[in-house]
Picture (cartoon, rainbow, N blue to C red):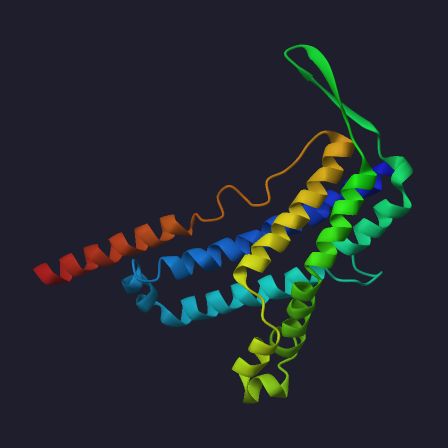
Length: 217
């Protein structure tokens, strides 16, 4: 295992965090704007129903992959284990220039791993519930879900707040690794992942113009 390997894994996982966050943010945007853009949603109801379901499906499946405890899957847990076994790769200080002066700060991979372990234990129940929902609802269509979907979901509850917290935790861990090895960090989401708002505005303007045209006719 090399420094470059860990950087590559951390960057790849953080990119996945950004994609999952986009699923979450776009889905939330669709829900929040449901009343405001009701005419647009009703203009293509099947499309938007399928879109929202696909967003939730991919979000749940990808969240589970992100926290999978499997040696064959690159995940937060696997990268944590890799870092724990290769702590000598990390520096004990990080430095950068500010106003032409070099500044140094202490860096402790041991402390990063300790905080990460505590967070993994704190979120263990939510991660298990995510995996149960994936297996019973999103990946395999378990017969119990078909018969009593509400009971299955209530038996393995996961709140949107917990999903947001898990993604923030994953981003923080990965950014700590990248900060120690490259002095760089990344946002946990894409800057333009809610540009669907522009699509709604254009569609609504088109519908309004259509009504105006037919009204004049």
